[in-house]
Length: 486
Image (cartoon, rainbow, N blue to C red):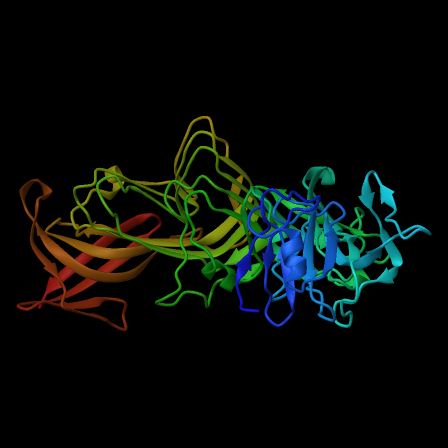
């Protein structure tokens, strides 16, 4: 017979929806339509044996049964297999196990339950060996799917249930590890019991051995309410983009000293409003290099500014290094602090410690006393916020700023970088000078092309036209300078 599609005439409406299609090499017709050839026509074509499939609650093309006609001695098509023209039946919450012969009574009649044939589970139908020698009725048999119940949230009161289909031999198939992702929750670890005494390895693949006593596997996911980035080593900071609302949860102390390269840089964003839960751990060696990005960019520190909704708790920031290039003379005022340039209303800061250094340079002629609001740990603080942030006991905190130091005669102003610690001020370097005119007006700016520090502590400054010997001395908090032109 040629490969073609044949249909039963509509006037013959059989108990099972019928249509007929030749299958490749199987000598069969699949019954599922309602127009075309009658069943007698199909029988007369040589397809003399009727194979009736009952899906026992399963569905194929919105029907719970199907009929195939086959020639004598031909194989019976297995649903879902190539060439069968019958899709694999689907039953919600179940996986297809196999097909069994339909149970019959002593008279050879089908036994029914709720009007439908039932499977004789002692007689499994073998599609690979059976060759048709008469009419046959077969009934699908199903496995209950396995289930995974994920308990999470505070007190493990929330649940997520996943169904795991089985293979025909009853083994569970894989469940994707994405099942363990729950919107607005971050999972720290997984356990087999609510007491968190036995850890569960969540790899996304479940084996039959894990379902020892039940078809349901209970997993307890220790979780945080919210989306957090989990931190237990420096490289974790390369795995995400740090936005103003990114939350961090520390699982261990982290040393960032060797982290910073040309490609890897980490800085907290402006107006940070996320949450940082430190769990008592320390992060060492954070760095920040800032140049104002515009007229409104005036707050600088490890956090430039901390906004309403931010929560930073139980963490130590050790050996922070901040370098600021504040050379935009048009900006009216800067707020500078080692921890934060500004903390706004609504922020929560608890059990925070910090140590480190700040170095900042301002434009020549900038009035530091009037325009730089340096608060040590915090530059500017909202009146209704009481942050619990302190220096690490006995840790070093240094501030290096650019300052103008006048000679006694006020003929010159020397530009020096001055470092201040708890023990007092010291001169880090001298880098230029200017003449001072009437009304302390600066003129004849001479930023040095070459600076040499002499053994006696003085500096030799060479410009394109002149050479100067400059000495800056410290007495308590007071600075003085001498300038001698060669």
